[in-house]
Length: 365
Image (cartoon, rainbow, N blue to C red; front, side, top):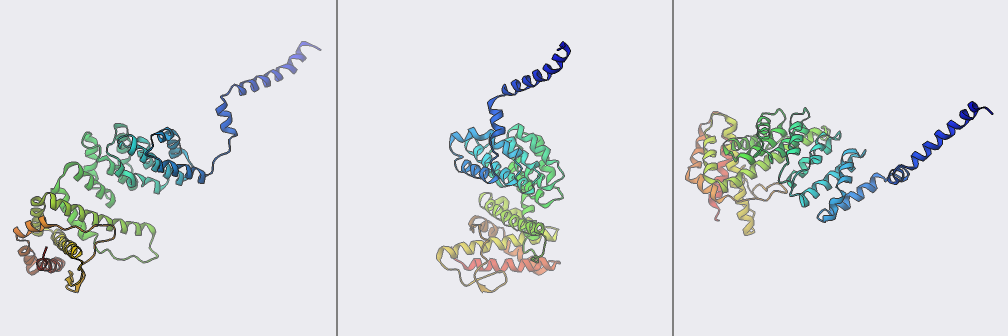
């Protein structure tokens, strides 16, 4: 046999042997990963459920690389959501409440529900590291309102040390999306404590988002979601403003009187509605404490129970704010609105507020 024929026969065999030898040199972990069967989505969800329940245990931090890989790469949005939840809980318990960049990146997830995860868990975070701030600033400039909404909410944690975050929040107060605007106003107030900006916003949405018309069952789910969101915003804004009325009583009371006399009808209505709600809440709390909830005039003038606060919101009394409003003669201001205002809607809400105010005066603390 000639040398040429030997080479033609031997070279392919040598190449094959070399290939097999190189394959066996691969790390065992790589080969075993290929041979290991893929866990089902349900199994991954069970693992993540356990990690969330054990998130206070220090050893859970060893699972962070796996969790973050599932957050980014898992094909099932349910798994990505639960992985995000677990990562947020671990950061809360073991990383001083600092928001990890991986959590901020969920704002760019293809699943709409998952893009809202950051809003859901934002309360777990006490600070936003610089790397996370960069992600949030990018998200705040996106076209999707859901992305901007989550970014603005958390940028408030970074605004004290980052002027770019503060500017992004300030600009978002003029956003075309009402949910982005709401998050921006809340974040701005948290950063600045600026009642001059926050009070008129809260008063306006008492009018805009209160008593929203019911939607027919056939309405799109997005319309239903937006309606529910507006109701929650209205209730939350009222509660925060009522709390501020007990903490910064003189400032809030003077601003309420200012807006009762504002040139804009919607602001006059908002101020009157707020006074009415504060009075009703205080009546409810006093009657609840005494075990008596009958015979209190509502704003419609019926002898009935006062309007119950929505489920999930604890009714609050406002003794300090009401006392200061009395000193500032809020009743006289409301009588002026009821009798002289050119706007019928303003006259009507002023009359409602006066009925609630009168009922309040009849109550004994």
